[in-house]
Image (tube, rainbow, N blue to C red; front, side, top):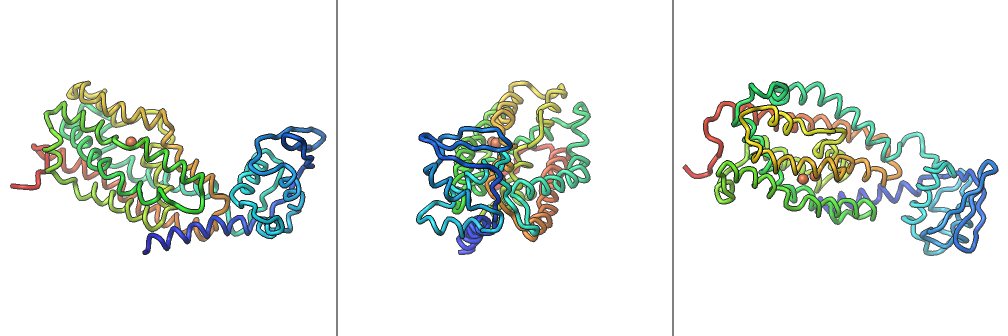
Length: 340
Ligand SMILES: [Fe+2]
Ligand SMILES: [Fe+2]
C-alpha cells in the first residue's frame, strides 16, 4: 500500500512539474513536409523525426511565451501526450531554442542530483575513503588474505539480493524513459552474483556452502535500507545507484589492491575484475544521472529532504566496508555458517 502510494506521489511530482513549467520559445518555427525548420539568430536548422506532427508542434510551441504553463497550452490541443511534448521541450532546451523557466523554488532533475553528488562526495571523503578498509587497501601487502576473500563473500551476498531493491522500481509510473533505463539496467545486472561465485569456487567454496551462510549484519543493513528506499522513495533510491555502481571511477580500488597483493591468485581476481569491468564499460555509474535527467523539475524542499537522507546512506555504506575489515581481519574462518 505504502509502495503504491509513494509511486503515485512520484508520478504526480513528475507530471506536476510540466504543469508548472512556463517555457519561452526563443526561435521561429516553420513546419515543412518532413519536420520543422527552426530559425534562431539568422541560422536555420532542420529537425525531423518528431514524435508528434510538425504542424502541431509548431502550433503548441509558438504559444510558449513564458507566461503560459505547458498543461494550459496543450489542453487546447486535444489528446497530446505530455510525455512527448516534454521530450521536445527538453531537446529544444538543450539546443537553446527554448528557456524552460523553472520556478525559483525548484531545480532540474540533474541539478538536484549534482547537489546530492556533491554531498555524497564530501561525506565519502570524510568517512568511507578514510575508513579502515579503504585506507588499508592502499598498502595491499599489509591486507590479510581473508579480508580480500571476505569482501568477495559480502559482495556476493549483496549482489545475490540485488533484485530486492532493483525490482520494486521496475514498474515506476510517470516516466517511461526512466522505466526503460531501469529495466535495461535490471537485465544487465541479472546474474552478476554468479560471477563472484565463480571466484569463490576457486577457493573451494561451493554454492551449497554459501547458501548456508549469513552475511554480516552491516551487509544486510545495506540491502534492507536499499530495498526500503526502492519501495518507498524511488527518487532517493535512484540517487544511491551512482555511488553503488562506482560513478566517476576509472578503476576498481579493490581489484587493484588484490592485484598489488602477492597473496591473491589471479584465478580468483579474474571474475571480480570481469564484474567491475562490466560496471565501468557499460557506464552503470552514470545511471543515476541518466535517470535524473528524465525528471524535469524537483522542488528545493525535495532536494533538502533527499540531502538529509544521504547522510544515512553514506553512513550505512561506510559501515559495510568497515565491518568487512573488522570481521575478516580477525577471523580465521571465512564462512559464517548458520548451523553449529
Ligand atoms: Fe553488477
Ligand atoms: Fe552494475
